[in-house]
Length: 314
Image (cartoon, rainbow, N blue to C red; front, side):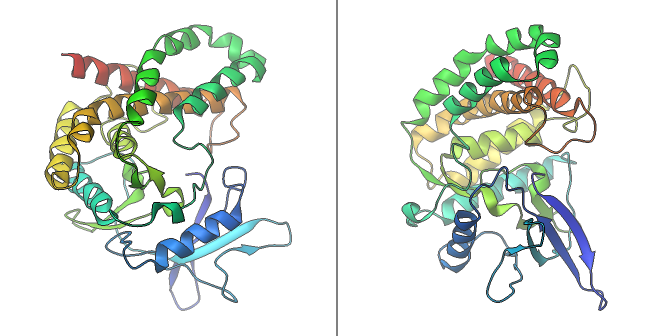
């Protein structure tokens, strides 16, 4: 999670989620504030079955403390949150919910939605940042991981192809981070209670959202597990693809349908690149508990990419 997040309880037993905003990632609080207000006041936008209720003080969602740290709080939504998928059914209902999310926002004024993080889905920018990190990053980490760098860079044709095809399909409102831990499930895990982590809602393509769902849902391991092989769950991939296509048949173009697997492949690879870039830069973006967490994440995601590639080629 990008923000530092805490579960707090008041004297009446009411629970809330308190967040310290990561201003290194979200550099413009004004843009973030504006996006939230637009998202929650435009009637056409349906964010989830249970919308997040942000608390306000003097009409403001974000508050600054004496240390100039930015905070916000919203009502706690009871339910279950997972780091890895527990069943085919979870994957199916999540893919259906994501497709409905995309469908429900067709027709809104996309020009009113600002990008909360500059170049968040700009894959060329991700490659440029990796190149810069390999030149200016932590020298010891660069030297120690020369082999991994080489095998990673050998796959750049995948990213180049994605950059070209993404320009040919419709722009839509996307969640931007539909990983498994951003879905709150009902207690019996039969329905989605809410989407959370709405700061990354932006304009993009369904290829990105679908790809990020595949990246997160089909990985048998948690991000920092050191599995080296057999991390890809093909059954979950097939279930997600089938459910998303079934729910999206009334709005997806033929081009989008055909390119969904390409999106999955490219997002798996780009996420490995993002983790590795952060590792080389000294872990400034993703929160870590151990010094090699981002390197492990990068290698884990890269292995997922390789196994997905083999599956799609078979």
